[in-house]
Amino acid sequence: MIETTATARYRGRFAPSPTGPLHFGSLVAATASYLDARSVDGEWLLRIEDLDPPREVPGSTDEIVATLAALGFEWTGSIVKQSERHALYQTALDQLLAAGHAFPCTCSRTELQAAQPPGRDPWMPPRVFPRDQDRELQRVREAQLRQVARGGDRHQHVAAFQRPLECSILMGR
Image (cartoon, rainbow, N blue to C red; front, side, top):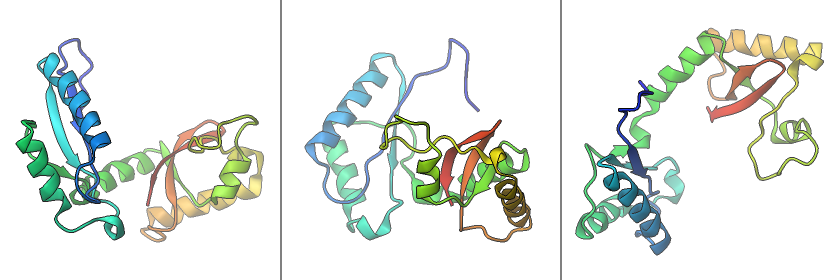
């Protein structure tokens, strides 16, 4: 649950990828985040971004944690590993899909890029896809949603937030 009152406690975090030893740039980011959180008596979380196994270096997580501890960093609660949260994310995604707030999108990167407004920064993630302008495309999207609801095709798409006449990418599946 997200706290929205003025009494909500500040929460900072540092989320390194275990692809090798902690490098200076990451240490600077960790320090800034840590000091921001501690300056307002907030929480500071350590989350390991271990979602790219081919790039991970064995032992890096332990080395990063040991380096942070040796430098005096103290995190709030347990260290969170992203790879252990798939079920949590899947539950949230399923709720968004079931409520109609998201839909499966099998569009290629080329299709998504072509649908972007002129002048949009090409490095920004795709945000717009005018599905309703093409009846055939709308029919295909509805069929894909039915297939996902039946439990099929669970890894061939991304989910996108539902908005009138457009969508924004939520996460890869």
